[in-house]
Length: 394
Length: 192
Image (cartoon, rainbow over all chains, first blue to last red; front, side):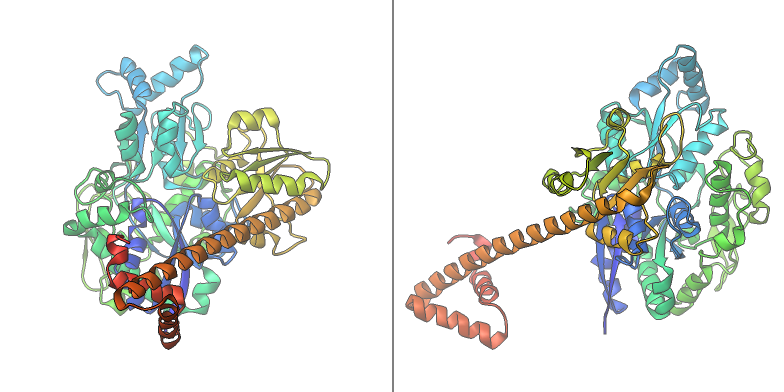
């Protein structure tokens, strides 16, 4: 007997686990008849899961947390049984802005210090503020852009303008000169480079190696009602992600994703985010699929920092939607290794290390977060309050 | 009251605008793309947006009052009418109101928009079906011609053979005809 499921996705390279599982028949082999629906807005993905039109979807990790808390929408009970990837996002600067930055700091034109100089000069001469587009208020893209700007003394709320645009619309807006920069997932950053000679100032793989990005968000009521189907879905997606992660499959994966019904984008641009490309999306290796509660806690710290949630929030309730226990159970089913702890200290390793797992240790990479110290999820509030630029207490 | 309809499908937007024209005194504007200049100059109190508009997340981000967004918007959810928001999502439309507006008058607007979206969907489905019926008839004609030529049958004999095949396999005559053309290579080379 097969079970029909409706899942949503956005045209991004990190939707690959869903697309591969569909195209290679992994859902079917788990007894699932999955229909994938491409949407053009994250809000619509969220609402369709809330309304029960979809049972689950490709989601921005911070959006899944916000929707659960009822921040930016009605509270939508979701569970996050797995992540879908790490890396892929890129923060880029238009050719014109890069040239302006270069005049101030010729030796490091893409450094945030050059942006700070442009911001000050524009403010002094009364010219319009520099504007950046990102994909959603609750996204790693927004937090990466804000973190980077603030690290150079640029207040993302006061000194620059941040607008939101769909990933697929960002390249066109950059080309038309409506925006001066962006932070967007693959392959759309590469498209900005190809179409408008944008320069990439920071990649997610550099900002935070192994940091969070997209997750699988499932309707909690659906997952609770059918735990066996939830396991089957997670197993199919793990299998697809392992396939997508293999360098020998990169060319075939780029070709598959490029098709009209999936990303409808050039395979050469998608390929840059795969295998050994500069955006280096991780689909499975180094525990990239694991729904680390400490990733979720870091996201909460930034939501507090930027005033999206109150500092009084009950973090343990907010973090409960992340379900490493479900992921571990699916891995045991499938005979795959998985981390044996729910959380870790984030950003604490400057060299490769080993994470204890269910079946021996898992090799991990260095994971320092851009210019910052380690994040202990037990000390979330302290971390959130420790930034020079923050909306906490202001 | 000012209403902005954001819909990449201009025909659907017109259908919604028509439906709302006699509802109450409304100043309605429709646009394929959400433009910030238009928001600033028109100052709508209600925005109806298609869920398939790529600008929906832009609108979603205008919740916070900042110097860039002086008039925060909120998604319209009417707690007195449970299920309305869900039904609208299913129909593919959402409504946002400028913060502070009394929601009482918005409900009927969202209901009309939802009905019009469903109507448009129905029209499009009917059209697609009509087109596929027409294509089916053409396929049957071509299969009949093929049988007549290859097996020296009359038109009537060719048709009854197709009908028998359809009945035996429990499929439509058009499907059987399409298979026949595919197997004979007519569709592949598209020679006929």
